[in-house]
Length: 339
Image 1 (tube, rainbow, N blue to C red):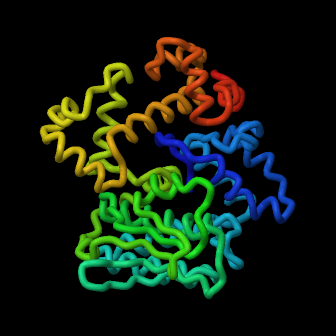
Image 2 (tube, helix red, strand yellow):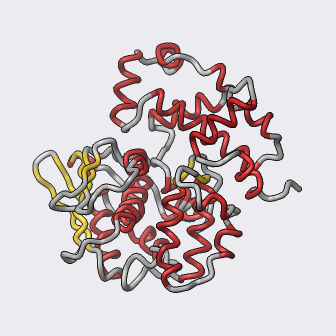
């Protein structure tokens, strides 16, 4: 799996979670941070975020270092190349149900501590993640579901909306990553760890083919980290529409709905079904644009402020520090020097 320049950001807390096992093994992660252009100052800022592309590059570098695409979260591990093999096995399935069963069998054969089970009950389907009765780290459960849910979405070429996500473990200090990535209805301290969705989605035909696998793998895992988006997703349409305009020109919801040829109520409902609101999309996009520009473009902080809709650089500094806990300079110092 390789990194890709997808838009979106990831909490620095997930960076700490990802490198946790490597740190316990006294592995030198300096090369991992350098490969992802992650400034060490960001590791000490709890609200900091990094681009999905940077997290993806870190994932690849860490997987290379550990020979494990699952960050040492399982006592056996997921050796390099395993996810590619699983993807090629799943893409030849007849429908989503068939593909999910192949995915779950593959992971059960590969991992020792996690076992997924597909359970159907009326109009609801659940993927239950068994842990052998041993409470695992929340990050382990979440990463397992990112691998499975992200691949499932790609296979049917649409986001699979989740009704509920539940964990056996207690809640983290900040559960926004799970609500943003999976769904708003996230519960903790439950009897089981699972995700649920409409059972009729299991009949969806596989929309991808062996010929499209390489492109998917080239973009992974960056295309799995933020809420899975494609052209059919309403939130992706909104983000793409807003991204083509300067933030100060972003329309009100009713105006945007007219541009998308739907009513305001319909647009709002479709976004809610995907676990977001229009204001949430705008706020997250503004933050992500700022981080992306600071990390990859040869622009001054004042220019980045202007491009994100701030008339005064000082106001941008305040907002950015509120978003991330650090100044824009920490991101500039972690960015590669412009050619």
